[in-house]
Length: 466
Image (cartoon, rainbow, N blue to C red):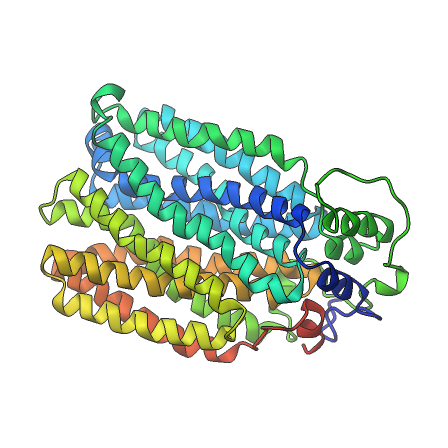
């Protein structure tokens, strides 16, 4: 029977105490890099269809609606991947779930490169979405469980610097080169997209090999009653490398096993103890991630349809994503200094104002670039802080599932909102699209007020309050 009392607590707080004492080690740095590498390739893949929209329409003979449906297939696959990956991570471990996700993502990318028609592309992007879905949410949950309390916010935010910030910026720079100057050497507009999908899929195979070195999190191992394994994982995290250890003994004992836990299942995320958190962050994720996915996916195509060339549209989108990089860096800096609610509320309000300004004044190239970059800046602060916040709100037994579900709600928005954005663009141009984004951000600010503050508290302290 699912319990709604004290979802997670330890008798002594030993694990959090020892993680806080060791600070940030070289082993934790390599854990961060391995998780980040997978997320970086995920970002490239996620932005690929939007960047190559004009090429895919010409090569496959598809319409704007069908192109949007390809994005929707990826997003729906992402929802499936997040739900399944979160459950697998809570049931069998974070490391196993991450490796499976990346393998599926690579397979789907190779199928996309070989697609001969619209239907095959649709299926391949669904497979890609499954792989993409769990990668980010499991990664942030995993890292949150393995680092000191004082470093948790900044380090989890760093993942979004590499994926959402650097990844978004470099992805459009890469697509600009491949689809522009290098396109003739890669077979022209009708073939270059195949080489691009192939290029994006192959490097991920290297990450799969390195992922074997990742240790499991000591918090997950404790939640499973595996005290000795948890001590070995803690010893690795305290060391200078990821080399497995055969040492026995350690500070953790059977008394540190969580005394009461929510059952590891998607239904537990809606148990009374954590339901307000799920509703609040889920609604915020719908607004934040729905707006971001919509704009990142549609912006190159919208600019082309407004009269800009493919190369110019990709270059402009890359320039706008300088704001994403700076926003992710700002979020990492703020994570250790300002509460989660304050950051999300402030950045969300400023994002709303910027989107409204774009809708009213975004007519010239200069204003499109400046206001677009500003909006991306506030968007990335908001999304990065939500990524930090969500795994902190759930106990170990459902942390990956809870993080996946609230972020998956954002995935649903990413599947639905582009269709509305296309209709608004047809009726009102870019002003309609950014007007929608402004309204979503106003609702985001309201939703974020109902989740508890988590900064400077251990994961056990946060969840003992439930």
